[in-house]
Image (cartoon, rainbow, N blue to C red; front, side):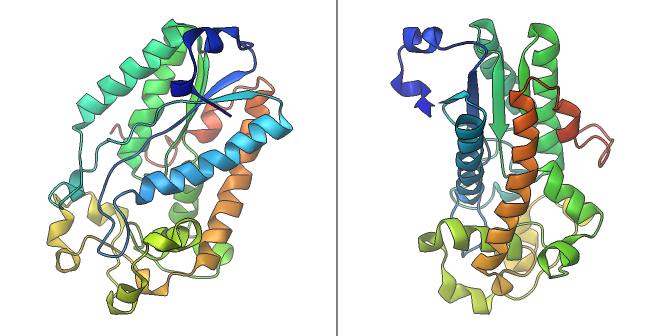
Length: 271
């Protein structure tokens, strides 16, 4: 995998346009409770991105170019917590559009965006920006592996898939803590986990809040972090990595996979 920042423009220009694919991680710098790092979403997206790069290069023979990440996105409910950053949605939309337009304008017509910020309005906004750029420039920009965990949550599949049924585990709870225990165990404050009481919250309830400071005694998490295990993180990346990987195999063959990642059917209202 090539790093865009380490290449000259002639290096990028010399790559086969049919084989070069930009791979860009995006997501918020956002608090994830007292036990997880502010980069939780970024670390998870980096892990998924790494796995997808291997598939695209080793199996599909593509040339993956790692684009600079976008580490600042909307994260409204966390903005009162020290270190968190939240970009207003219309600024995020315009900025992402400018970034992708720049790539499209200079001939980089294939791009895969990877995020682990499973926030429906954020996912929809990102997908719609990709769609607008694709329609204007004829590019093949895709985003949205978040569709798969969102479907599992929406259709109550977590018990069948992971062996637990924990409704309301939507931010820094069992799932995200388990993922971080797998990929960055050095950054999890495991000594705190036994003291974090269950604080379930649905997406619907979360959508009505203005800040997570008003929930869970202001600690910034929801769900069941004390029950986290790296084993669940292994299951997570195996399941969604396989699903996303299958999409990318077809993408590399030139298939239109955009609708297979869309979450419009889950949340039809505009963000």
